[in-house]
Length: 287
Image (cartoon, rainbow, N blue to C red; front, side, top):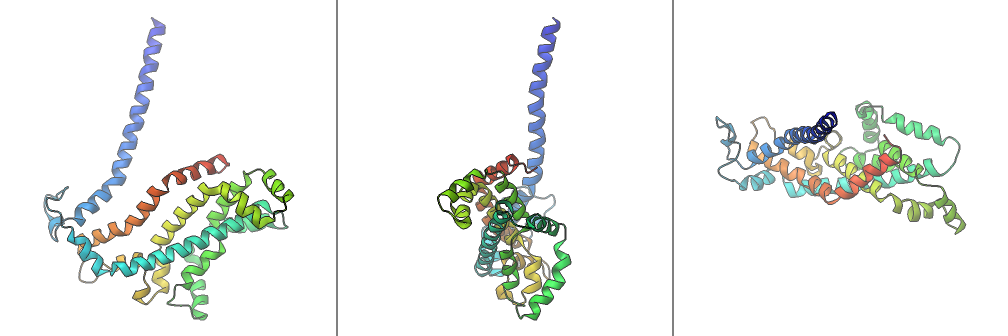
């Protein structure tokens, strides 16, 4: 009898555990999805629909024209192309430069490489606002104010976090691959491009997603350097919706949904590689 009771208790514990986890994850999911659903509701409402009491959680009329009207107010096509160009260039610069720096620090023995690695890691401890004024002064002095160059140039000097990821990932790859390639006459560039990088595709995709997201959502740097509204990215243009005479919230939310769409598409397309990249980083000893 005692044995049967223990078995029943064990079965109850096994059943209760997954249920509790499911409920916990469900609550977290609802808390994260709810703001997006509320944005969709407001974006499809009429001008005064969102001020109804009690509020409507689901619109009775779908005003799809809000997306067109909101896009016209921010000149969506133009600022979208600005954001796309900036994000692609910044992502390319950060990923490529970080791959090279990470390879040099992890695979090429040279005096002081640990010091350089610690300098990169230490730079992550400094808030970006600390260097804003000195860097602005330098770019203004060389005549690059009101251009994209202050946004694009720093991207080609490596991202400290990405360098850290590359160094951790590369360090987990056996050096026997390098030795075999050197026997075949390959130099460091060939080893990196033909051996190491093809083995690091999940890491590369992870960096692309993180870099594109960060560049697409960047607000402060374009706001500081870009005075001409024709050069504005989408992040700054959308923020300009809030004016002195009020905000048309349905148009504002519609444009915000359009603003989020490229990031959602990128994540869902590359989700498989992104999850593989996170798993590979964890297996390489990054915790």
